[in-house]
Image 1 (tube, protein in one colour):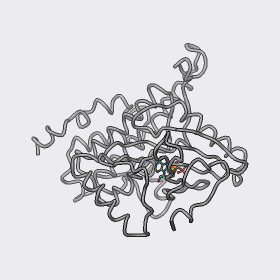
Image 2 (spheres, protein in one colour):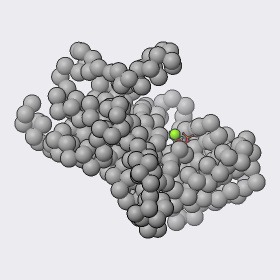
Image 3 (tube, protein in one colour):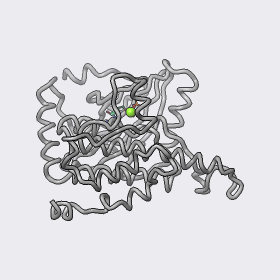
Image 4 (cartoon, protein in one colour):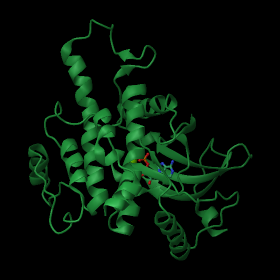
Length: 315
Ligand code: ADP
Ligand code: MG
């Protein structure tokens, strides 16, 4: 078995059979793996190279795991287990076989309004749970961190090794079929590496004693939640037209554009996208965080509340 023999071996990870690499980051590789016992089917394992990290970076990994441990929502990737060896951290995660939403945007160029709503509503449910129930701000919402579980994906107990190139194409066909039949499946928010807890998870109150919290702290919390709402605006914009609201070759110019909230609904790409969708995006891409929509306001917007049937009827 060519694929399997190429997989690295990690001490302490003998229970899991690594199948293929699914992604990587600055300090980590993410693998698809299956359980050698039968307790779990397939999982994703984030192998973090502890030996390349300083103590601050290590503490951040432990924080990421600690935050995930307390989360339980259908639209958030579940933490299954965590362990470590001398050199590595092993974060065992619920597998999202569809991979990144990012690749689906690249593949389909852009999403219809109905498909975009289907996707962003699931992201919003995850954010609502984080902001309103868990007191967590994600702070890194982007298409690379939005994974999905395809609607008609049948998890295999014995996944076949992939030949470079050809088998990937077959999988793509299946996922596109899934997109066409009225959905992309379940969207799951991943990567809590930059997340922060802003509420005391025990008492469900803002950190510090209730009633004694200084206004700037209360304000701070509202501000930190609003960063996720801005990012959701960027994701929704990108889903609908296929390119991001803010872009420039020069980082300096890009930063300036973001700071001023300088974006447009560029013609001809936005000509046929509803004014209602544009209105919702403009309430998310609002520079003043006090005026920006909260997750509650987002969920009450007419474009979000519209059903697929109504859109079809109106078209
Ligand atoms: P980083 O902090 O390095 O960005 P992530 O947790 O975002 O780490 O993981 C990096 C990439 O690995 C993701 O963008 C995705 O492609 C893949 N990945 C991570 N978790 C999973 C998972 N549970 N299922 C499938 N792919 C995953
Ligand atoms: Mg990531």
